[in-house]
Image (cartoon, rainbow, N blue to C red):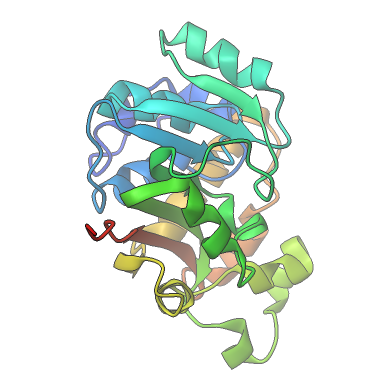
Amino acid sequence: MADLRRAEYPLSSKYDADWLLDCDMGPNPLWLLEDLARDLDLRPGLKVLDLGSGKGATSVFLAKEYGVQVWAADLWIEPSVAAANFAAHGVDAVALKANAHALPFAHEFFDVILSIDSYEYFGTADSYLPYLVTFLKPGGQLGVATPALTREIRDLGHIPEHIKKLVGWEAIAWHTADWWRFHWEITELVEVTSARLQESGWRDWLAWAEAISERTGTPDASLEMLHADQGELLTFALVTARKPARVPD
């Protein structure tokens, strides 16, 4: 059985490795979330949207570790899958199927919006942040953990072959933390509170791919890419921001 316990991720280490691997929709979601949460103020009772929540592992973690109220929204996974995970862990969270560009919520409903390893699929358009922040209360927080490169593909002038071989053109959505900072700050709709490349990003990603390979008995598709990269370009960007509080009249 894989061992996913890491001293640097003490909260994540409490969860069953087989369950986490069975929930796999992308690399090490709890490690990413636990690291990202260090740059956020998550308190019991806050209303949190887990956007691109997959099979619900991150939603379980948010509810159990921080005591927040969670709405888990995903387009590709049936809500019943996440709901079953919530029930198994004694978590009271809402699971729903939703398109990130057509969210079924009232404006200013959430205290926090988070997206772990999914924002790259729907959030890079110039118009998306202005849309998303309409669902945040004044003073609300936004947090994203997303695959990243240490250099922009525009600066490299091409998609490196070892990355292109696995994900093709999708790699153009993998940006540096500085790119994300500028992309958000230029709107003046949020104040970016942190934007950093995860130092352990490549190493964690590789450890997860090795654990998946052991679990399934088949080499994970990302292993060749990660071995070829050796941490030169591949990592994750962790970005947080706060919507300005409403100024009293």
